[in-house]
Image (cartoon, rainbow, N blue to C red):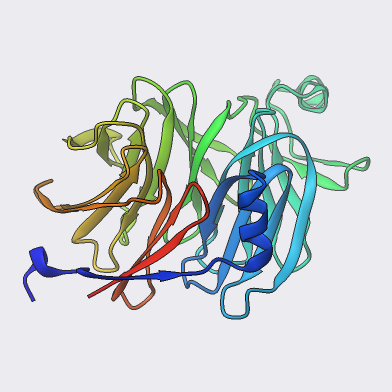
Length: 297
């Protein structure tokens, strides 16, 4: 099958009823699917809800935020969920127990206390008995996070912020690995290639950028959207990249040369999330108003 012919048929699907109700009430600000497609997480004002996609049942609710949540990402094995919000923190949750296991909060009083108690001035990881969670060793606040993505091996977590920067974190410890400027404006979408060597980013500047993760050098810029790019996803073989955003269009690109392949209009509103199914045969799209569509080969 020629690449220009893929994903032509389109069927409308349904979000879990409870989640659709929250969309209708405008309570949802972030949504993401797990890599294997079995889980769906949505975040809003102070809470995160996790659903089973097969049954539509909600099996976990995570709480503790005081500000709006803006970004979510599952680890490759579904065991962890990363979340970012307006309170300048990046948190990791155990999806089995619904407990927070790691918090990045570079501007908190506890971080300063840990730093002052360390002989070399580098903050130490510490357990906060008040919240019963581990505080990471980084002194840099992750900023107002707008996008998150785990590397395929689960060891690295990428965050994109309102300051136009991408930050790479060690998932196990929360240590900051690197920071680099990526967009003129908000970094609204992130996606790792399947082999983990390339990172795609989308921004409020309407651009999609591909980065070499080893050198942090820009590989190419994909131009085609006319408004903010808020969703990205690589195909299972890494040969295709899909992007979508506030211009109500989905675009397919060849990753090798950055060439555009197909463009699909979405009548139901701005695109919030895009993901390929585990077998690569379907492209799943969730819109800002809670509509769900599946394009099939």
